Image (tube, rainbow, N blue to C red; front, side, top):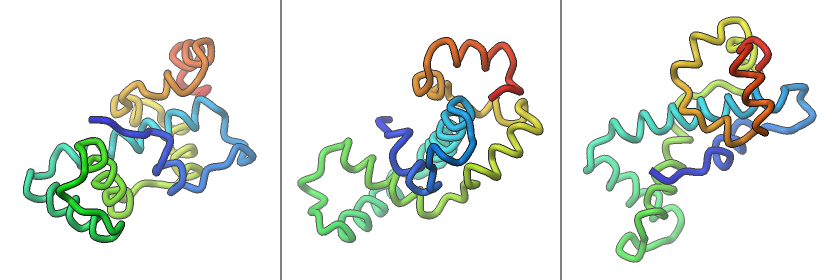
Length: 130
């Protein structure tokens, strides 16, 4: 599934670099949100996905018959971002810092691509540091 792990989830969370959250923790949060949206997306029936595409296309004044697959996935993902409950960054960061193991098994590994190699390696060695 094509997705933008930094796109909608980051905008929806109202992230900014001046919030005191380190780069690795921010990347893991975006990974968590992407994983959660992916999980919900994959659980939908084909009929439900198509209904979401139609609804989102109508809202965006687009014609369903002219959309490519990638655009349809983006439209459904955008709809899911509006309906799937996701914690804000600060809440998630507090909960993650208190118990990283609770979240790490749900991460897809996208966070490693969002941060530099040395930061990713350091975080893997000591999860409590982000």
